[in-house]
Length: 295
Image 1 (cartoon, rainbow, N blue to C red):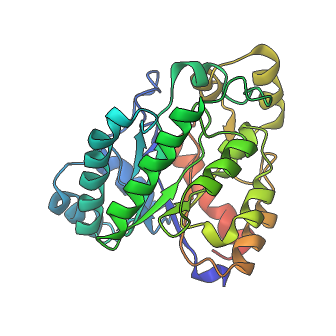
Image 2: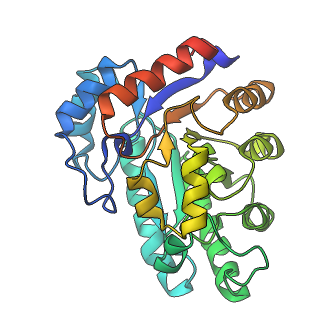
């Protein structure tokens, strides 16, 4: 069953993220060339891609790459933002459908307060959203999932440090408050570990809800330093918190075993945010999945 999973990658591995201001990323074509050369089957379509789906498809087809998904961070916490957020979701979904993809990743929009406390959110609820904002967010996600489902798409929610859905209680509450038929899950092993959540437990507990996967690893010593020094998310990325697969604290074998038992046959998207040498990191991460899991 493991062999039925497809391995993709994403632009963030080459430093493409508006928050990573220190990175000088390659051109789009150079990045796509490197993705193909290191053996990935597809890529998520990010903000650094052309808006025209025909242009994107031409570039991907030329390299034998598939469009995997897209990531959309939406602020549904305020109901007055719902219409704008749903338009963003509809636009991203339309582009993906034109590219042959069927899953759209959704996330709560990062906030300055949460980015500053990433990985150190208070477990007593003092950092949490108020009840009205939480209800609004879940309602917006259900509406987004319904909108996507009407056109044959699937929403997959991504718990993300620096947002209001980061720790285990928040993940559990969101899964309870949203319709599993409309809002699937995109667990990110690195963000879960960073948040102090057991990735292995999430992949087991919510196996039937997983529609997309991000594989990422975390350096144990740097995570301890991030927590001890109160380091914010962006600074943690810059110090190299996210490391090559199999070199950090995430139990990849346990995660792949859970996905195998659940008969997951979707994408595994490798992410290592802004490594110093993206090409080397991409090649090593891809080689690790081949050697350890025959993927």
